[in-house]
Length: 108
Length: 122
Image (cartoon, rainbow over all chains, first blue to last red; front, side, top):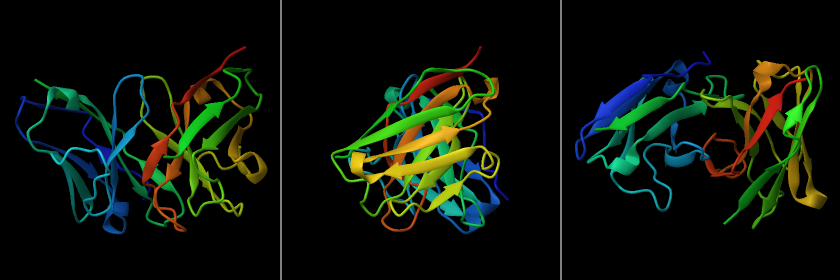
């Protein structure tokens, strides 16, 4: 299968914890990566692999995976975390890459 | 820190060919990374187009494969995208990106260009 499914929108109160999920058959074989995208900007990698953060990404961002579901957790969400979040992975065949439809995160 | 910069026409006529180039600076196109193109229609999500290794090996999105060609120019330290038979549905911001993995493509993109908007219209 070559689809990754994300909830279109999620909201979180300032300082609380939020989990954004990504589902797809390919996630049984491949770890996802997660991207934060703010309006008018290019995506920024926030989590990749099992649970790796690129340099400069706050440690409130973490990732996990179980079965066909990958999750991005933000512990203590900040106002600047309001953005669109996309997951991706290689497809089940490993021959190409697929993105999820994206989740719009609102910080209340 | 590698930097990527897309360039090319911002307007392409329907049925024509979209051509973009991604210039790489601060690093070599011949490094052991894969290089990719990703696009985003206005107000919509990200769509992977394809990738290339400096050897010339490529992988393409099956839904675009018949219209896409990605190539690499080592002498200019850049790679390029050609998308043929374009329609209004190909209107999007086009990004180039570098895979952070070495040798094997992972789909983990640690470096992105700023993106360039291409509009398909007569």
